[in-house]
Image (cartoon, helix red, strand yellow):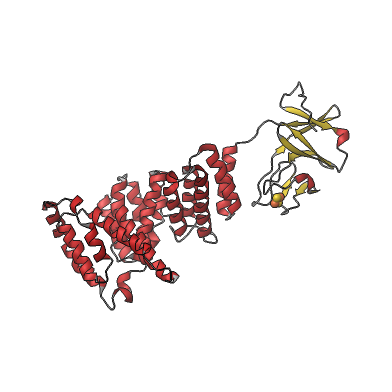
Length: 430
Ligand code: FES
């Protein structure tokens, strides 16, 4: 039925049907202004809702009404007929239209209501909190259709992931940030897909975890960044997560430039060898990339979420595989003694970083002689190779290793190759 006459007294109400068309206990669908609307005549009154179930589109006029609750017959989502509110968060609220009965007719108010942007944000939060991929997907598509800007859903995922996982920054936030990095290179139709996968990863990673209660910064602002940096490294040394976290948030609160805070964080993340199989440095780098997208105003919660990894991550100098049969740590400790001199010589070298022989260095890095690798890298620095270019060569070698890795390897072997690359990439990016 399509009756488009408009009541003069209130121009947003549209005549939908005659009361005689809707007997007690009955239902009816009408098509008004592009909306298919289901009308229900119940003992509690006459109600109108969008006929499409917000979950997966089943026609709601084929549902059951009991005690003013409408139940969809496909997956049994239940809706309050007064407001359209759903009792099942995996569905969504259905739009309910105000109804009035006048002159023997049923009138429906089609005027838009509510704040659709706010609703989409709330639904995205619901989806992440309850790990509901369908809700996350629908919300992300709607948000990107609306603004085309992925930063808003990204920020929501970042805030959630840093607060609702006691262990702090993990694989979910890393995946989300990787996909956010890719967004500018993706076609429009793939952007929502990327954001969807990243946010689902955050939801999965936080599901079932207790929240994190953040440390407050130190009162006042007496301590300098240099002091805080020194304290942070000491607290990480003795595996004190809370002391480390308080240093991190206090460092941000000093108002220091992001570059200075990054210097402090990367120092703490590299005082021990290859912390947590390389994850700690990779996560630190991703956290700074996330702040580049989301804004420095989130620096305290985002960077604080790294503290536990710094303090409790496995230190490879304590592992057998880094000590036997070759003592890699001893080789590195000896090399660290020469870095300052090598950099000083490099600054005086006539060769520029552009002339640095990456192609000759990469096969050495991919070889199996750790001492030769370290010697070649120090030699490159002495010849004028910039540290960032040297880090780029290592990352390139790590990527080549993955490209050449035989597919017959087991998952654990692949993980070793992947971790080498993500760590080397983090050094290069940082
Ligand atoms: S379509 Fe209605 S509950 Fe799934």
